[in-house]
Image (cartoon, rainbow, N blue to C red; front, side, top):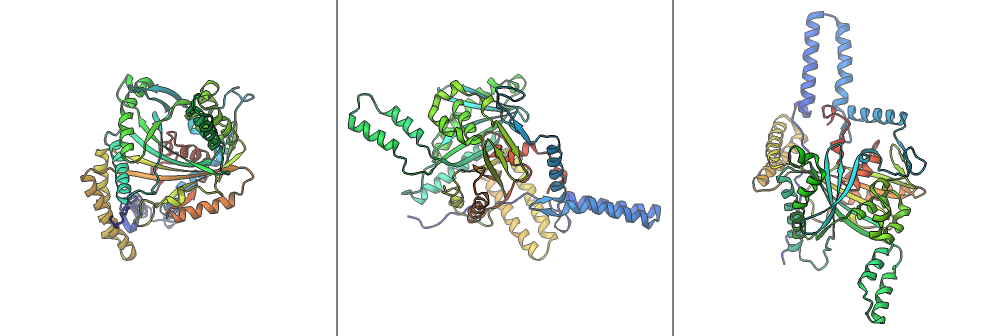
Length: 492
């Protein structure tokens, strides 16, 4: 058995090279301000005018080059201003239910308010749910996966599975139809209701009494309170085709259904046997995440949930979107986002500590969002990143130059791997923890920080966007960059 450990890494954040380590846009803005001041002084010969221009230029330029957790000062100021305006307009509170303005409904709030759910069937007879978010015109399909453990598995097999997952992502990016792939691994409180329902389905009426009793006893034995792991992968497509086909959800479902069997086969080769979620499963999934008290009833109902629930009732009855946390139906959630990828190379177990269920964090959700580039986009981007890295290496000195040299090596390796058929992907991580309102959130936050540090991930709270981040981490097709409210011109 081989003792060589395969490492993964070489990720780089795209950054255009400018003067003195600045981005190209900031460098051009600074150069333009200097030229404008010089021309103004030549024409006016007024020191006071130049002083005013210098002060104005500093107010505009300094927040653009000073960054806080990877965000420029303008980004931070814009987010705070937008949050204050939303609070003044009352947009941070949501009330639904029988006595709301639209009685009897509890639609999903915020960015998911214009979403709809429908169910279709593939040519092979598989039923699948499709979520349509109208604003970006995205269609999403969710599949449940059963990750295989690493016990009694050779390292060569694990490496083969990892390679298969990379090939799965690369295959989705080739056509340019997939906007993003979201992998969600979630730990939820175990109720044993699903096991009991499955045992009841498996036990035959003619089975021996002793065998039936053993099966029922095994299903009823809770083994103490604990958590179970649920995993799912969501594929989000942009509208496929042209003309009428792009505007017809049924045509979109037909196109996606034709691709679904290929997706399931690729996931199986990656060691992830998958099954598409049906409509009642998606409704129950979303409802139980917004309302913790509904979990037992939803799991007890099973497929009968489709007779009593609909997508219009899957949302919370009330929520409050606070600056640093999210209140919804008697629960409190906090979402963190990845602020920086792991430094250096990691093994396939890099996220193990973050993903493992813990008794002090009973409800935890980790969503990895892969935003895929098409083959044509990837070719341009890897070449552009390599040129920017070379330019940065030639203009920077000292420690910055050493970092720039490392970036040149990484971007050059990306070019070579892309030429050999690899895809190019942007990725991010959302970590959501949910518990009751009176839970020890400071202790939970410390636990999350510790787990993230063990996984070598830099994380930060999603300040000013907790409700939207909570919805995005559900893995139901909400891709936050497609709904950005801050222009890229002032971003880092």
